Length: 287
Image (tube, rainbow, N blue to C red):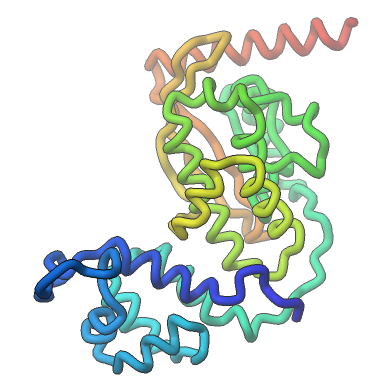
């Protein structure tokens, strides 16, 4: 196995999580005098997890593999949510994971047909690393012309941080960006030996200060559901609910759809945008 660019990712994650907690919130005495560390000390985490301070210290320093019961105790001590707990367990198994040779993903035919049938609903198919594998016409009209993006750069997070138009398209770009980084970090735990993902993270850390800061925060999230508000240059404000469906034929592919309540201004806006996109496509095809 090739060495990881972050050899003690588990330790960095644990330190980031304990720095967010306070003794008072955890029912511990605050102690006298000024504290030298933000959040909980190692010995306080060890006390909450009912393990020795030496054991926890060696775990955080990457000098000791942890059993599942110990990881569960630490997860409870740090009040990790489901995504963070899954991430912790993924990291703990990193050293035993065998790198797999992965072929370039192609959209599943069933998902391609679903996309083609969704004429009034924006939808994309995302794969590993949050690569955009396929999209329908309305998604391209709503977000960006994915066809114009070189295939090797056709990644949702990369587009979000490198295309200046994204910062005006999303009404709360910072929130969207933070969430995307947290989702990408979960991908990094699932595929620790993916050189393309490592290269993507390295590039964005160099190019964008926000990405670098949010990546260092070690927050994690899964691609599931949410709401986004867009300021679209053609149809104005769109407030959309988004959801993901995982392909049973390939769990690494997810269909992401954006919807709005029937009769709402956003639903009407999508209909207008679909009509605009169809007209724009016809005009382009006749040039």
